[in-house]
Length: 388
Ligand SMILES: Nc1ncnc2c1ncn2[C@@H]1O[C@H](COP(=O)(O)OP(=O)(O)OP(=O)(O)O)[C@@H](O)[C@H]1O
Ligand SMILES: [Mg+2]
Image 1 (cartoon, rainbow, N blue to C red):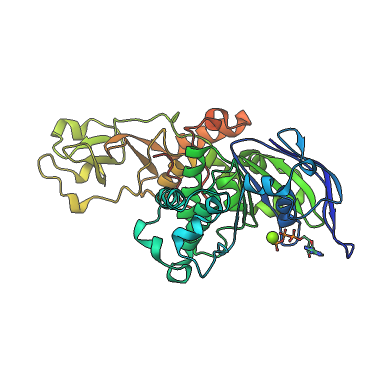
Image 2: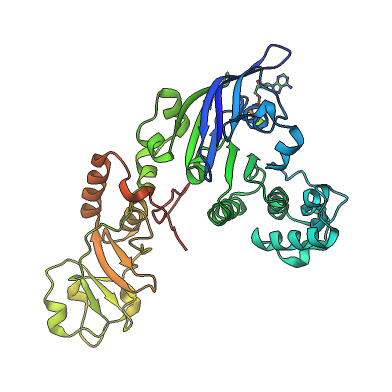
């Protein structure tokens, strides 16, 4: 949809902010521009809505040269979100969001209805509509910024470090919200950040830029992690590249065993049968209670308080291999507990089995069906919990 062909921006003082950049920004997905400060991210974004005009090269929108399109029409087809939201301080939240609809001639009532609908969509309580921006938290203001950009339903959303000013917890919420909105509305989003974890989490495609406005690599996140183009990209990706890449592999294929799992009402025979150093005890509904050595278990008299913690379970099919590995690492027995959506034990799996699955996945060289819609998405840290 948006195509940049060898685009260069040289500012009047001679600074080359963007140097012969060629990018094909896919439709209806999130493309992230990431790179160190001053590498030309904002300049690139602003050339897309013609707030900055390129010195050389061409930018095409749906095959037509941007230069041929009136700036006003162009801007209306592209919502723009910036850090700290850039709200009008003297207007209420509702009126902030209704700005563009009003501008393009919608009636007051219709514009406000639209604004109220968008507040709900971005997770803002309707009661906030009458407030002024200073009466909102930073995260709430950022949501208003997103709602305002979406107000006239533009096919394209340009976002320049929209979540940089909020704390990590709020930021994660905003990122999840953006992914959900993107899924529901199918916008084409160009998102600028200097945070590689944010880029990996949000991007369908990620453009890594380097100082001097040059493109270092343009690839899906899983490919960046597996095949960084050069030392610059590898350094920029940071540590734990291998572990982080596991976020893109599903845990669904892991082979689970259930012969180490016993109910809290297990009989003496059941407790004696398994040839295992540890058994996972479940409650009457099949939910995990904890691990124990078989010799410490007495039929009819299993003390729940005496059990070892089972750590944090994972959900095969929803969680990634990274999440499964994390569970195994956190488990006192080295075995991860798999549960279904209702929290009932589906089986257990050893670190060794997970290790073999990891080797197979890495060996396969790509993320296979992890590219599918229901596949895990990367998380910037901790256990990946994906899906509804
Ligand atoms: N109006 C301007 N005149 C001259 N140079 C400029 C102008 N705007 C930006 N630059 C320079 O162009 C380069 C790229 O700037 P740009 O704002 O695009 O970087 P950025 O990647 O968005 O950086 P940051 O992560 O800090 O926001 C920088 O060296 C900057 O100093
Ligand atoms: Mg910038």
